[in-house]
Amino acid sequence: MGSNSDTACTDNVALSIKEANLLMQTAYDSQKLIAGLDQIKVDRIVEAMVEAGYKNARRLAVMAVEETKIGVAEDKEIKNRFATRNVHEYIKNMRTAGIIKEEPDKGVVEIASPMGVVVGIIPTTNPTSTILYKAIIAVKSRNSIVFSPHPRAIKCSLEAARLMEEAAVSAGAPKGLINCLSVTTREATDELMHHLKTSVILATGGSAMVKAAYSSGNPAYGVGPGNVPAFIERSADITDAIEKIISSKTFDNGTVCASEQAIVTEAIIAERVIDELKKQGGYFVSGADLAALENIVIQPNGGVNPKVVGQSPETIASLAGITIPEGTKVIVASLKGVGKDFPLSAEKLCPVLGLYIEKDWKEACERCFELLQYGGLGHSLVIHSKNEDIIREFAIKKPVFRILVNTPSSQGAIGYTTGVAPALTLGCGTLGGSITSDNVTPLHLINIKRLAYHLPEKTGKAAGKPSSFFYTKAEITRAIEELIKAGSK
Image (cartoon, rainbow, N blue to C red; front, side, top):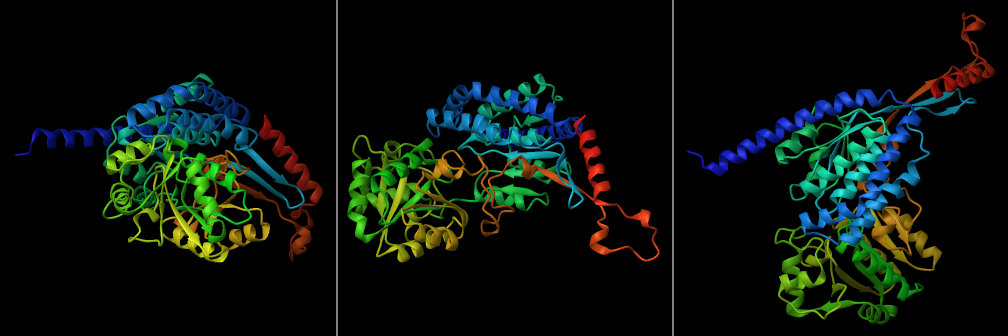
């Protein structure tokens, strides 16, 4: 006879699956309605969502930290503001409805077609900002969305989704456009990913979750792990480089997947790099303390220990049973290799850094390659240098799709301190098992129809066909102009 807890668990799973199916139907029906809206109406709805998210950025950040016990409220507030205003600034003039491009000379007209229902998988590390961002880009592209939040972030995720839905409806969107599971189970998430009405999945989470999304049978965009090396080359401004690395690694206590995981530098400047690290709040561990840190940060079978994710250096040191000075910003471990024998060479979603000292930039280049192969292919790499030849050499040869130059990696990769598309879903390309190497925008959530007119001068007149069968360029141009006028009404 089963226990009461087993019965409750079974009931919970059944309830969550039922809710998943209900929300999918609601989202499917709502999407059919928003698909008929023009660009002006869509943009008005998106603007309302942006303002609601921005206005509540602080409150949502505090909710997220209180519920998940991960990260820093001030930094999560910045993420929420980034996910709304910064993203909107980039996408506000983006055409995602009706005719989005026309090329009279080629006789081609491009027409946006929404994908349908988006399933958004939400991580515990960045719950509210990820919901704001995914809801905004989904609606901008005239899709509906159903969120599956992390079990440790249900309350704050529900509130973020509620704000987005409420703002959208107030601006003229159909009800049921933005939905979120209130009962989260693995089975319910699986139901969403495999659902017949799912058009595309936006998966943010651990490697297992991303792999499950790609194995669902539905199209998916996934975020792979980031084991980001930061190379400090001899020509770099060392003080500035360390300041930026620490500002990135301490941002929300290292929860951004693009945060630096190891510093790689040349022997000729190693002493200056180490001195600057210590001066700016880095504390080096070795011997028994290093072993204790390895044991608490990385699990025996690999992967970061959830207990240290997004925690402060003081909390991590306490868990490891080691003592660190007051004011420590990052804990640093000097490492000699990469792999299972060097646990801290893996991705660490907390303010812990590895340090490698190499003979010259060529050997540093190889070390960076090793680190990327050990869990970061396709994601990001940082280089601090004034030598453009070496910067370009790294860019050409490194197996990543974001090479960030003289900028904090966490903020640079997402487009906060660089000119890349502002996004919280960062594709890792085929190297990282992803369908795209881009920072994901609304354009990744539309299909494009192409109206293609016959070009007689390309092929000549077909045998036996009357001349009226062919169109001149002038006729094609007039036809396209008429389509544009019709599409703008």
